[in-house]
Image (cartoon, rainbow, N blue to C red):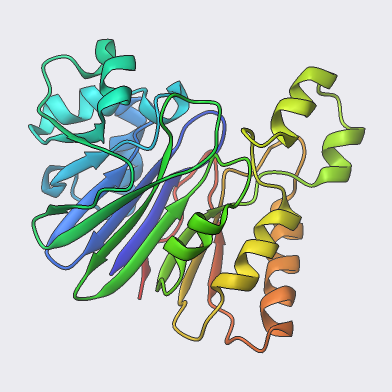
Length: 256
C-alpha cells in the first residue's frame, strides 16, 4: 500500500492511494497542471490512476476533478448530491454515484464512504480496503463522531485532519464569524480533537499517518508533529511515520 499527500489545505487538496492493483485519487483541488507536476515529481503515473473519489463539493477539493477525469478517461466516484451540486465541474465525465454508508467495489478495493459533519451538501470520509489492509481518510469534519472513530479503526495508513490550534485561532486575525465557523460542529478538527480521535485509533498496525488540512494561520507543522508523536508514544503505541500534508508541495510516497 502506498499513500501520498499531493496537497492539503484551504488552497487545494489531493491524496493518492495505491492499494492492491488499484490506484486512486481522493479529490483534485489543485489546478490540473499543478496536480500533474506534483505527481510526476513523486514518480506517480497519472495515466495509471483508475478513478477519482470526491469527498465533497468545495472548490479546494473539486477544482480539477473533471479535468483530470476527462483527460485520463477515468470515472469520478461521488455521492448523488455532490454530482448534482458540482455538475458544472463534472460534465462529460463518467460518474459512479454512491450513497454515504453504502460500500462499493472498484477493481480489487472496497470503498466505504462514511458521513462526516461539514458545511457541505453531503460530505464523506473514505475507507479503502484491499488484501493489503485498510487506508482511511477523514478531513474537513467539525466533530469526530462515534461512527467516524468506528470506521477509521484498524487502518495501516491514515490521512487525518488536524486543522488548528484553538488558542492560535481565537487569538488570531480571523473575523469572529469565521472563527465560529471553524470551531463549529460543521467546521474543522482542532489539534486537540484530532488527538482525542487518535486515542481510539492508535494501534501497533498503524504505519503511516498524514496530518492533514493544517491552517497556515492558526497552526504550525512542527507543533503538530511534536505533539502527535509525544501523544502516541505516551499511549505505548509504536509511533507510525508522521508527515504533514503540505499546501505547497507533495509529501514523500509512504509505503506500508
